[in-house]
Length: 113
Image: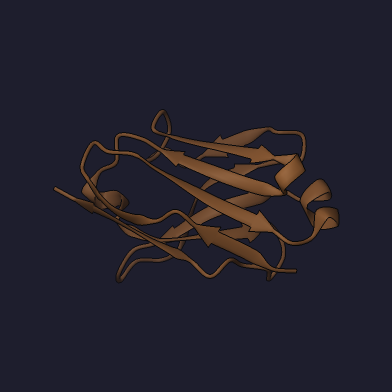
């Protein structure tokens, strides 16, 4: 199973980015929750958002009301729309099939002040 993450970049504070995570396995995509995680320098990896196969979502408190996770079943892709970005959102963002060792390669998000 492969996860292809993309969409990172450099953005000013207050700006927006949309990350994409395309999963190669239709089977896993249809039965497993998918999460977006991030890891900032010298910090532990944390989960910022997750979505179940039925579309239920949850978010870390630090990103609630700013980030939105969604999924496109036809494209086997999970998105993370990030609005009102802050410098503290700067990190490498990873997607993961929750409960598995299947991870995307990471995409760097840098938010300048």
